[in-house]
Amino acid sequence: MKKSILLLILATTALFSCKEGSKSRLDTVDTKALDSVKNIENKKQAALNKAIYTKYEYKDSKGASLIIENSLPKGGLKYVNGKEYVYVVFWTRINNQTANPLELKMDFPVDSYEIPALPDQYFKVLLPPNEMTYEKIPLFNYGLKDLNSFLDKNTHKSSSLKRTINSKQSSSFYVVLLCVTKGAHGTLRTGLSLKGQNLFYTINDREIHCGNINLKDLTLEK
Image 1 (spheres, one colour):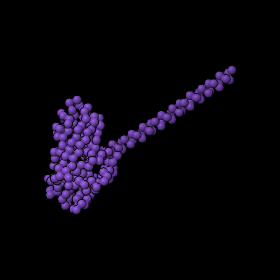
Image 2 (cartoon, one colour):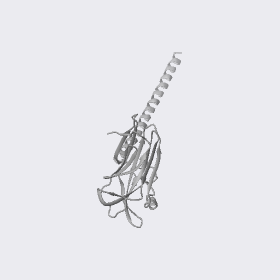
Image 3 (cartoon, rainbow, N blue to C red):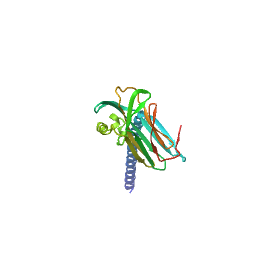
Image 4 (cartoon, one colour):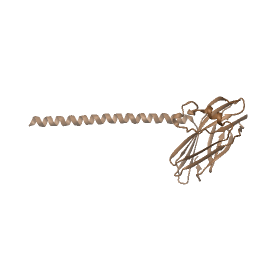
C-alpha cells in the first residue's frame, strides 16, 4: 500500500514538473516571438523616420488628429520622350484619426511651375494612381512601378487625385516632379500642408494651392 502511494506521489510530481517545463518553454517562445515582432516594427519605424522630411499634425475640436507626412526625394534620373527631362519621386501619407471620413481632392494643371530658389527651372507635378506603402520605402523610386509608361501618357496632361480616407485609416500616394527645362540642378524639398480646408503643395519656396478637404476646424499643432 505504501509502495502504491509512493509511486502515485512520484508520478504526480513528474507530471506537474513536465507541465511547468512545457509552460516555461512556451513562455520563452512567446517572448522571443514578441521580441522579433518588436524588432521588425522598430526597423520599419527607423526606415520611416529616415524617409520623412516634414510631419504636420492637425487637431479638431474634439482633439482627434489628422497627420500629414511628406517624404524626402528619390530619383533624380533622366526620362526621354522627344526631349530629355529629369524626374524626382516623393510620397505623402495622410493618417485620419478623426471620427469622420476624409474626402481628399487634388488637382495640378498641365502648366509647369517656376521655382524661385531654382532660377530658370520649371517643374510639372504629376500624381500617379499607385498606392504607396511602408514596405516600399527602401526600394528604388519608393517602389513606384511603370513610371516611364505613366510619364509617356501623362507628361502633357493635367494631373488629379481623389481619395476617401475613412476614420482611423491612412492612405499614401506618390508625387512625381518632372523638370521640363534643360540642366536641372539643385536640391528639391516638397510637402503637402493644410490651411483651413485648402491643400497646399510646397516645392522649395514655391507654395501651390492644389485642392481641398471636407473636414473643418482643424488646427495645426506646434
